Length: 264
Image (cartoon, rainbow, N blue to C red; front, side, top):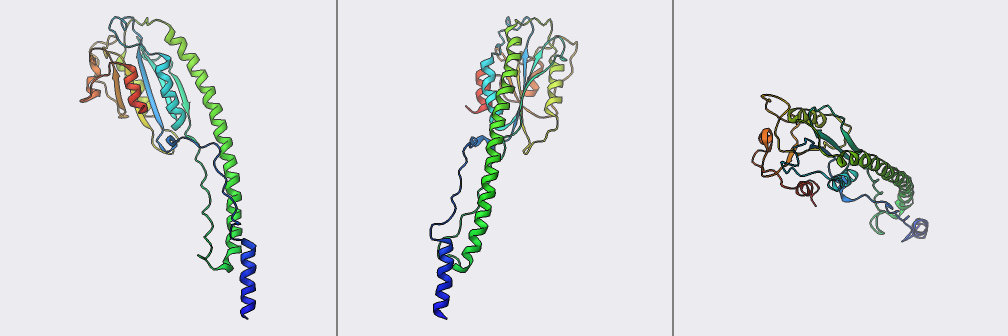
């Protein structure tokens, strides 16, 4: 009987082996750590009145937007650019990316030798092999999804930068600034529902002195969507946007505001 038991244990051990665990494949295209972050929606409003340069309001450059596009590529979300002009119903230019795909989780490692009944090892090995095979299939699907998303990001980025470059190359020529309407439209955008895994981080980047010249007796502006408001002006001017800042001060440069948003 003792000899028979030893033979059974030996057979089980021989089927599995001390180092016969199937190797866990590694992720070939890992996403950056930012995939664990919330998506971000950034509403950028730029003053396009003819007096913007006289007021020394910083001019938005395409290079100012590139870090924001990279942020959205990493975590998902959207950048929408609006013009503070005579009317707030001008078309918004946007760059959108869905959240990155979630990487599959590898199966738990096989128990070490001596920690389980040897007679259970064949069954455990079979379960592990099936899980490892499923993981490899999931990993292949994940890699394909990452590659497709990278292609989509490049395509969307090229389309967005082409359109926005044509706007930024034109000198500001609006005759008035509808600041109230610009805020109302941005609030509608930032209040939109979306199929996000996590609630998005909402940001309003306003590049203007906040002077309303398109309306007489403009009403108080407010964001029901409660975004983080960053104002880029000159000389600390905020106009009717001052209540949106609370105790914060306007930025003197677009680069400073962008660094705050991206954390870089």
